[in-house]
Image 1 (cartoon, rainbow, N blue to C red):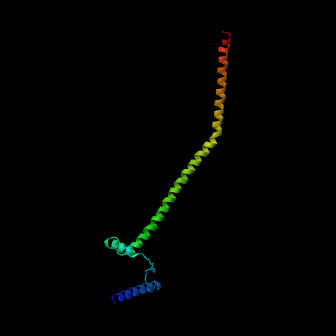
Image 2: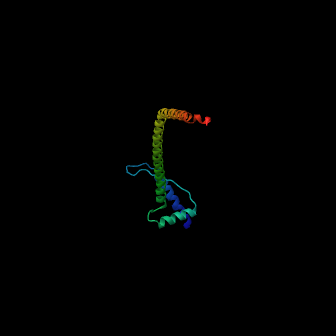
Image 3: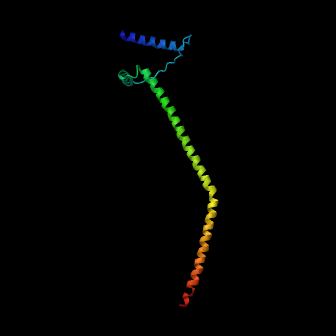
Length: 143
């Protein structure tokens, strides 16, 4: 008999919740709320219930679930913001590197001109040294 009363009470409670969720706001300031059901194993329900009972943070499993969902959504949003900020920083670093590379490439013709001048100077001095050596040591064959 007690079992039938509990089932009847739960049925009435569920029907009341569904009936309430279907009503439109009739002048009261509270927004319409929707019911979201979640099926979980009995062991998990017991674990959650014990956690809520021992916790000072939550007054019900429903509150714990709402806080958890909001936390996940907030963390995801923050994570996306952090990722975007990191990508912006990396993009800015790449832009700076590109500017430095572009300046370096633009300076290459001047550096090549300088290298050509140095090479010509080295060749000229080597020719002078060879000529001087030939004058100083050219008579060696005769000794």
